[in-house]
Image (tube, rainbow, N blue to C red; front, side, top):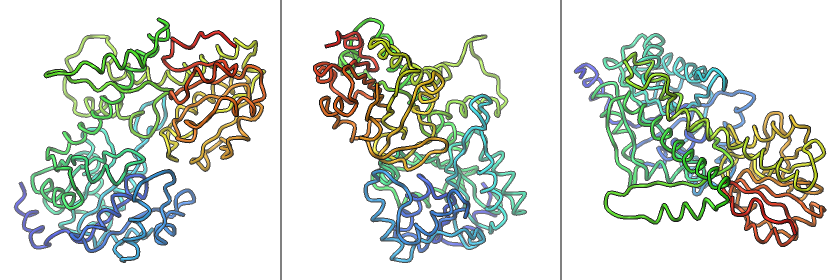
Amino acid sequence: MSNNLKKIIEQKGHIRKIGVIGMGYVGIPSAVLFADSDAFEQVLGFQRDSPTSGYKIDMLNRGESPLKGEEPGLDELIKKVVRAKKFQCTSDFSGISGMDAVTLAIQTPFLSNESLEPDFGALKEGLRLTGRYLSQGTLVVLESTITPGTTNGLARQILEKESGLTAGEDFALAHAPERVMVGRLLRNIREHDRIVGGIDKVSTERAIELYSPVLTTGKIIPMTATAAEATKTAENTFRDLQIAAINQLALYCEAMGINVYDVRTGVDSLKGEGITRAILYPGAGVGGHCLTKDTYHLERGVKVAGGKLDYPDGMESLFVLARKVNDFMPVHMYNLTVEALARIGKAPADSKVAILGWAFIRNSDDARNPPSEPYRNLLIGSGCSVEVHDPYVLEYPGVDIVHELREVVSGADAVAILTGHDEYFKLRAQALKRLMNKEHPVIVDGRNVIEPDDFFAKGFVYKGIGRGDKNQHPVK
C-alpha cells in the first residue's frame, strides 16, 4: 500500500466530480446515475465528436437519450440530471483534469472473427486522453470487458507514459466491470453486486467510494484487478456455456422427435438441497458485444499471465467448444429454412425470406454481432431474396432495415423469427398467410414465439428450434 497515494487522496477529499468516457449502453446509464446521487456534484460525459457517434453529444445535452428500445426510467433520468445541471456531455477531453474520478466504458471488439485478437484501439485512445489530462490523486477505473491482466499491464503503462505519474503512487487505478443487460440498464447498475478490483488497497478503497452511492440492493465485492477482470469474462463465459448446453439439447431433441421445452421443464422441476441448476432457453444464436467474445478474453488471460496450464493434451477448451455450438445456431436456422422450403417444392434461389428481428436481444436496438447477420449471409449466398424487419434498429451497415412489417412479409415464401420482440408474439396465422399470399407459407421460429398448432391449421409449414415433436408435421 502506498502511503504517498493515501496522503494525496486524503488531502483531495471525497470524490465529487466524475468523468465518464464513452457514451454508450454502459456509459450513459452510469453517468446519469452518478449525477443523480447527492454524493457527487458534477458528472461530465466524454464523447468523441465523430461522424458516427458525435450526434450523441447534442442529444444528451438536450436531455434526450440516443439509445433506442425500451430502457425503463432512462429517458426521465437523463432529463432530470440535465435540468439540474449535474450532467453534461462534451467532446473536450481536457475537462478530465478537473475530475476526481474517471471511468472508461469503451467497447473492446475483436479485430476479426478469424484472429480472435482483441481490438483495444478505442480503449488505448481513451487511456491516452485520460493520461494526457490526468491529475494527482485521480481515480481511473476501467469498466470495459478486457483480457485479464490488462488493467495492471497495458492500461497502467499507457496512463503512466502519458501522464508522467505512477499508478499506486500518484493516482489510483482499478477495474470495476459493468454487469448490465440491455433493457434493464439502470436496474442492473443499482441492484447487481459490483465487482471492484484495484491494483492496490488504496485504489480498491477509492473505487468502493465511487460506486457505493449508486447501489441500492447491490453490494461491493472487492478483489484484485486481475481477479475482477477474470470474474467478468468468466461470468459471461459460463452463461455462454449454459446457452450452448440447452442449444445442444435442443438439437438432440429435434433428432429424437421430442420437444425440448418438455425436457427442460422436467429437468428444471428437480428441486432440493444441494441441487443447483440454471437451465436457460434455446434459440437462433447468441449475439451482442459480450458473450460472443469474452470466452476468448478469458482464454487469452492465461497466455498473458504466462503460467503453466495443466490440461489434457490436444483437447479443445470446453468454453471454446460452447462458443462454437452457439455460433452454429444461425447455420441450423438456415438448414431448417432450406428443409421447410423443400417441403413445398422450393429452393432458396427461387424464394423470398422475411427475417423478423435484427437486434440480438428483444425490444432493443442493440444490433452488435446479431445472429441474424450470418443467417442472412447464408441465405443470400444460396441465391435467396431477403428482406429484414426490425421495429427498433434504425440502420445497419450494408443492410436495409424495414420498419413496416407488412411490407417485409408481403409475398414472402418464408418468415424467419430471429429476435423475440414483443411485436412478433402478436403474429396471427390467418393475417400472416393473407399477407404472404401463399398456399403453404413457411415459418421458422428461432425464439419459440408462435404456437405451432395455430399455424398448422392455416396450412403453414413450420420449423422451430428444439421442436422435434412438431418439425415433421403433416402439411394441411
